[in-house]
Image (cartoon, rainbow, N blue to C red):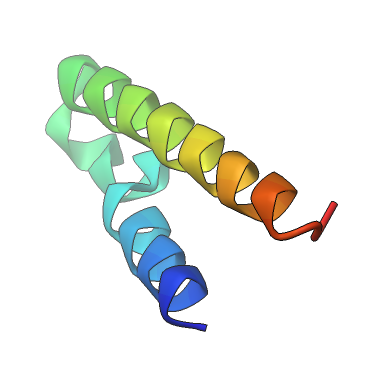
Length: 51
């Protein structure tokens, strides 16, 4: 439950839509961060047999 909560907090914090007013570079960085966060979450889900 803790890991899922941490994932959600990070996903909300780095979601590219939150950076739309800050320009293309900020959106690009947020998108890259979200990709890494989502890949890590996928690894956790696989390890726990959630997928």
